[in-house]
Amino acid sequence: MRIKDGSHHIASLRDGREVWLRGALVGDVTTHAAYRGAVHTSAALYDFQAAAANLERMTFEIPGSGHRVNRAWQLPRSYGELVERRRAIEAWAAVHYGFMGRSPDHVASTLAGMVMGIDVFRAHDPKRAAALVDYFDYARSHDLFLTYVIINPQADRSKTAHEQADEFLTLGVVDEDAAGITVRGAKMLATSGIMANEVFVACIQPLQKGDERYAVAFCVPMNARGLKILSRKSYEEAATSRFDNPLASRFDENDALLYFADVKVPWDRVFINQNIELSQKQWHATPAHVLQNYQAQIRLTAKMRFLLGVARKIAEVNGTLAFPGVRETLGQLAAEAGMVEGLVYGMEAKGAVAGDFYVPDHHLLYSAQALTQQLYGKVIAGLRDLAGGGMIMLPSGVEDFANPLLRDLINKTQKSPAATSEERVKLFKLAWDAVGSEFASRHTQYEMFYAGATFVTKGHSFRTYDWAGATQMVERLMAEYDLDEELVRLGKVGPRS
Ligand SMILES: Cc1cc2nc3c(=O)[nH]c(=O)nc-3n(C[C@H](O)[C@H](O)[C@H](O)COP(=O)(O)OP(=O)(O)OC[C@H]3O[C@@H](n4cnc5c(N)ncnc54)[C@H](O)[C@@H]3O)c2cc1C
Image 1 (cartoon, rainbow, N blue to C red):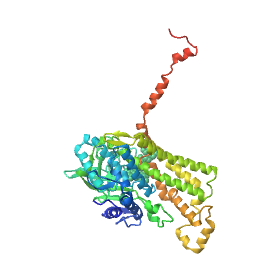
Image 2: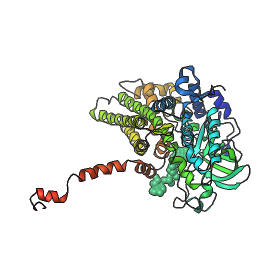
Image 3: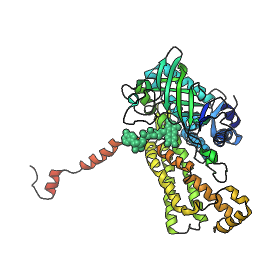
């Protein structure tokens, strides 16, 4: 098989998928004004991996096949292999400057982690475990782009899935027969769903007795019969000029609510069938959750580096770089970027052998998650602080440059000690798209929530910290003195006989 490249990916998306936008069916997502920029960025990722110069860094040979696929499918057996795999993730993240959260290496990491922990599935149901392994081989050999929907739609969060007014608000099993299961209902929130090949559907939220029908895990193609992809508003569609919206025009990966109108899933694609215990264990008793979020933290290092570059350039262009307060702000941002990077290296170095595999350290991963979801908004606030009104004091659109009168005024009014008027406008348009546009605002929401609300990520941090090691230190210190000895030492009582 040929290594997957961009043209291959684009062709694979012309599959009749049912994407809905502003009241109408979209048709071909690869050419539609709402999606084509993002679709072509996803294709650029595959072109990048197929380029001869990047082949070794980006891909590995599936053992015994002679066929190379992205390293995200590689099951790391050592620290060295984990680092090799990270370098591929890093290189892809640099292509999209960290702005595509659901690049194909995210869910590939999820499935890799599940296969690394396949014994957990086997212990519950060997047939479903075999289906997962076979599906993994299929997805890996085709280097598929998968997204996932693992969250139940918001409605009444004080009630569990089966207690909602509509028992099929949340996706659940309606029926099963010799061919497979039939599922009905909604899941949120398929980021990149419009340009993925397939979707992994599962439930990461805790389920309770009575919720059995919602405890499923399976994969279907995005053109599965009955699968409705309900796109959110496209920011790309309004970003008609790359000069005005350099990020939204290319990296608006989209998010979509998925509705499954009685979708049939054959048994060889069903990995969990109505099993609440396994539904939780698939994430936390296997390396799946750690590996997918480790990918996310690597991606974030690229985005942080990019945002710091924007911050520094704002200071240069505004002539504020030498001000002590500005250096302090930049220093703080640099320290925060360093922390994100350091946590990635730390979770690798402190990783552990799990069976045949090497897995990043759980607690450092959850530390990173809990801290970075709080950090992102602060970093954005730091950039806003540095920029002042410069991101607003801008020509209304690129067309202004085409009008000689306005161009002259732009040249008179857009001034900088370090840049031409055109360069200044170009930078501040980019800065606004990174921190203030609707695209940017969605990114803040994304970084705050993609891995769960803060009470969830802090819960993982609580669950995985070495409390025994911490409390034993305290106990050792307290064992070094006691009340009776102290009273004797202070001469308040005599020594005991
Ligand atoms: C841009 C974006 C992209 C996303 N992409 C994907 C994707 O590709 N795939 C996918 O599966 N999911 C995706 N998600 C969904 C994401 O995983 C969820 O948003 C996240 O898990 C939080 O769930 P929720 O949105 O239902 O918030 P909720 O769980 O409803 O929480 C919202 C807020 O309500 C409060 N709250 C709710 N429950 C409790 C509680 N028990 N205790 C205390 N406070 C509580 C907290 O203030 C919390 O912050 C995406 C989300 C966003 C914003």
